[in-house]
Structures are given as structure tokens and as C-alpha cells.
Length: 502
Image 1 (cartoon, one colour):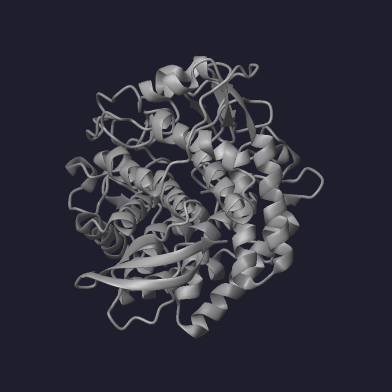
Image 2: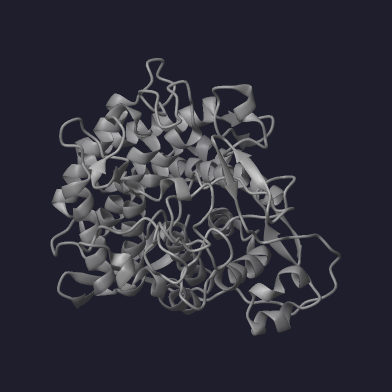
């Protein structure tokens, strides 16, 4: 979802890139355009393919004992590609980078919350009881240990076991991401304790961070840790929407639901009025200075823009705003067209399985890029573009041919098939202060729903809500013609949705 994972230069594997406030070094998927020479027509991954991807491709890395934390639920921020916990004195090479290593002594709340989300999705797709228990442990660790009981909100990180930063120096984005795991767990379970924490945290954010001019939410309330009160950041707004508002608002008791929907309406309007360029058909990553609005500046990438259009579209659907639906849909289609290009398969074939090497050899295939003048992408950007493309195709089918390539590429080239999981880079850099299971599992959930609808099959998802629950049943951000409850084991129920649509 819209993040700070950063900017990537794909023309020099060892280049150091200035990205906002830090330099970042990436080893990335190199892409180049060549003429089309022929191919074996691929098939869109089936629902079973997505379930296998989640359980065999992703889960092994995240279900390791080392991922579960001490105590369980205190999920570690930094782990090496083989799953081992970071040894800061002798760091593994994939984490020993100048933009990661300065934060080795920090444990980030947002990462524990995003990993909680990942376990929730794994349960949602498979009914895995251990994954549900890990989602619960993560949720309760966040609630019991990382809330700021004195000032409100959540701490951004702990350092040597103690909270870091004054409470006013914590970003509104970190406050949003503290909720993403709790939001998923609440959606699955209707846990009343989690409900109260989510309601309290949302009220805290919209009370404390709302700008005096009413033009959005502040980034920070006090200068510090490299951040300034002058900043006006896209993700301060956007990550409230994708982090918890859109998923949870329809599920809350009536008076709270009405307030959340009004806040969602206001924040979406802020996105479109203050952060969107009608002329350029994109969203600005920040708006406090002309330099931060330039196409090569931090967060001015297709990943953040496509997410903002996706959230605009989905918010319009939820709030019955046809103008936002149309603007979001048009924006997604425009951005997907800009972000797509032909990749020379020979350049990247070493990242693929023998099966796809055989099918795609001698071809140029559709791929996603991060920026207009840079042929490449990180995994989270690829996931965001795929998810929007799947949403578009649920409406008009226009992205189906592209998805026949980009979805198998994510499953194959990005996944570490030795230890499991997806990294920022192909098969690497999987657990650090801006990367863990969040994006890859949301991608798998959207992929499964898309595949089932494309194949004319019902989608089956697992919940653990109370027997007498009256909470609306919808498949994540999507809608369905009907929902049939199938009892499985106690509170755990499989729900069959027919005709997934958006």
C-alpha cells in the first residue's frame, strides 16, 4: 500500500540514490525493451495457484519460529533472507546497507502491525489456526505494550526496550500503520477489545494531526528525527485510508461508522484537491515545496499514484460518490498504461523457474516499472500495480492479457523459493524497517478473489467472528452477490462468496 519504501534506480545496480531524506542502495530487477519475437500464451493463475503461492511460496518465511518473536507477537523488525534474526555486529549482506543499518537498534511498531496483517490474510485464505493465533498475539502485543498510555497513540519504535521520540515527533503515517494489523484482525474476528482500540486511535489521529487550515493531516507535530512540521505528505493522508478506514468503517457500530465515513470523505477530498494533478494525471508525493512535487522526487512514483487512485475508486464505491468512482477508475487505467512496458525476458530469465524459462524464452513480456523514465520496480510497487489492474479487469476485463504475465512473474521471479517470502528485491531483503509480509499477502488475497471471479467460481474465505455476529460480510474491499456460511470448527467458519465484483 502507499509506503516509504523509496525510489529505485534500475540503470545501475550499485548506484546510490537520493530519496527524500536518505540515500538508499538497491539491487533490482533490470528491465529493457526489445522487439516481440514470439511466446507461449500463459494462463492466468487459478485460485488454487494463489492458495499454493500463499502457503508454499510466502508462508514458510513468515511461519518460521524466528519470525514469531519473544514473546510471541513481538515480531522482529530485522531478519536475514534465510530467516535468522539480525546480528547487528555481524549483519547479513542483504541488510548491511547504508539506508538500513543506522536503524538496527530500533524495533518498529509499524512492522509488527504489518506482519500481524500478513498472518490475518494467511488465515483468511486457508483457515490456518496457527496463523490466526499469531495474528491475535500480534494484535495484543501492540495493544498491551506499544500504546502510549500517557499521551495517546502508539509509539513509533522502541530502542533498547524504551519508546523512541517525543509523542509529537511520531509521524501520522506510523500512527496509521500501527492499526493495519489490528484492522485486519478485527475484520476477521470482531474482537471487542480491538474494536475499542481502533476507535480510540482513529479519534486520536484525526484530533491531534488535523491541520488548522483543515487541508489534511500533519506529518509530525514537532520537528525531530529528520522530519519537519512544514512537511505535507501524501502518505499522511493516504495511509489512513488504506491502513484501516476503508476496511473497518463499514463494520463499526452505526454512530462510529457515520463518523468514520465522514472522515474518509474529507480525507479523500483532500487527496483530490491538494495532492492530485489533473494536468499530469498523477498524485504528488508531497506538496510543501515545488521540489518534492517533481516526478523524480520521493513518493512521486507509479506505486503511490496507483494506490491513491485505487483508494479514490474504492472510497467512491463505499460512499456512493460516482464522481470519485469515475476519477479513480480513469486514473488507474491511465497509470497502468504508463507503468506497463515490454521486458526483455533474456535479461531476467535467471530469476524464473525452468517452466517459465521454456515458455517465455526469446520473448519480450509485459512488466511494470516504477517511474516514467526508469524501467524497473520494487516488489511492493509491482504488487500495487497488479492489484489495481485486477480491480480494473473485474470491471471491464481490459488488463487480462497483461496480468497473464505480471501475476506469474510476481509468483516466480520475486518469491524466494528456498526460504519463502518476497523481498524488496527479487528473492531478497525480506524483513527490515520498511518491508515485511504486508504487501505480498494483500497481493495474494486480491489475486485469489480475482482468479475465482475470472474462472466463474465462488471464493471461499475464513472468518472467526462470534456465532451471532451481524457484522457485514464482504470479501475484503470487494462485494459479492451472496455469502453462504459453512461451519468449520467452532468460531472458525468458511464463507462462500459468489460473483466477486467491484
